[in-house]
Length: 217
Image (cartoon, rainbow, N blue to C red; front, side, top):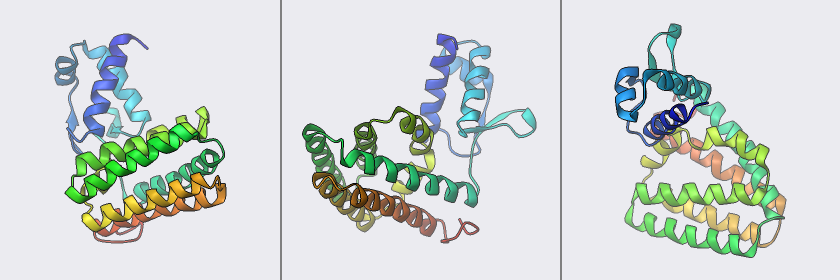
């Protein structure tokens, strides 16, 4: 891939993941080329990569749009996250360093502060780093690649932005429980905590969208 394609990919991906363009927004090559400061060919390559990441869809192979997801897509994404992040937490429990544990505690303090202020942006930044650090502690490049496209999906941000203060507080408490499991170096406990954390996030998203089943989101 060319540097121009990489630049376009990073810029467009950031716009999608960060919510600059909502689900269903048309992505016009000429506008994106001007935005990224590249020609249309690198933009076209970037859009193909983003389609493979499930962030862009091209119905009929024509114009590109920011992807949205069916209820089944969302449920499947959370199912996979629960399995993979649960496994990452189990691995991290026996590999995490004292420095990483201290950083997790500091990040959860930041999450607690965001909870008190009901600040979704601050929560998202600390939460993203918390989960990334758990994945780093798992020391599995393969797992990192598999999880990369799941944890950065815009639906994760949409979930957190619909949290009320009680939901923020639950997330903060679940992170604290996960840190306890890491401190005890208990892989099964850590896996259970992380799996439950992701499942609860799914049900929070489902409730915010008017239902709790794959067919109701």
